[in-house]
Length: 480
Image (tube, rainbow, N blue to C red):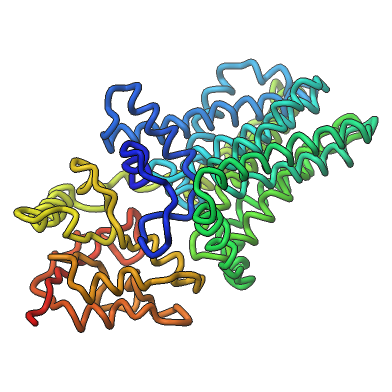
């Protein structure tokens, strides 16, 4: 939202860190989402933005289905005939959509986050590998070379595809051609470098600081990475089992390359997820695991159907039914289904929003600081400084200069400040786990006083998604 406001106002997307108004994400997803909302005639509609995010997830599902279909066709045999069946296609699309939006590794796919578009790019990158492996059409290499260069503007980590592709061409693309590998490497790595240089030309050192310095300063916790592996292990196992099922003869050895790319991708995602407490970075790898698993299950089912189901006994049908039931029960463990109940009361949620908006009444919006949430500034086109996500990222990595917000607090620039978790260790402006305090909590206590609180939305437990429904403290300047 903040980047969309900047884009509309012609304001630099990346500014000096003392403003605390930029973030570590590159702007591709935000600008593309805004463009589609503008085409729909709803350029400032949050519901439209979220609908577009679901659109990305739907497109991701289609590409995942095409990948699944191509994998099945590459295995030959009875399964290849099933890939054209509507009876197989509809359930496969439904399951893939649920995986693409699962609550364990893809919890932000319907929210205003870059994960949905990033997942679309990653599954497209995997599908291009399958298409190239199947057809050996050299024109596909040009599209593959674009994935890291263009994907960089959606998420910086997507440049890893340049390396994955080069390794694939070196190891799994006979007859090996040094000229082809060198040319592709020059195009993919060169394109990624060009994307970086464009960003540097537009925003100079501010671009480097926000998109590389801050994120690069986050230390990976191997213990946290292992914890995340224990959370997403069913997807990992699905991919491993699927690989063993699909690669059973020399005829199917060409699947080894794409499968190895998946294994490398999900391993990298799992390890690097140790920089934070969330598993959303592993979502694309889990989706590809689902693609592999459905392809392998289709192969096994078609083989059984072709050989024995026509004359199967009641016991064999019972075994098949048991397997299908077990597969469906697996959905809960994969985060694909949940009890169809709202996470919180809509009435209480409306009360919460209304009380926040009331705090802005009779005040200039640019003098009222809300820690998280930009809808309140959208109508006035205000690019707000000193937002909690911007400060929280840099407090954790110890890369932040907080002199700007400390100065504004001491000057009592803000007529009112609305912050969540002010009395807990999970205060986003000065978290208890930071190695060094930002001193923001201390400065707030010295210069502001709490006059009331907005009660948290009922039914929401700490850490539940969506974020931002906690109790809010209302602070006003102390009398001199």
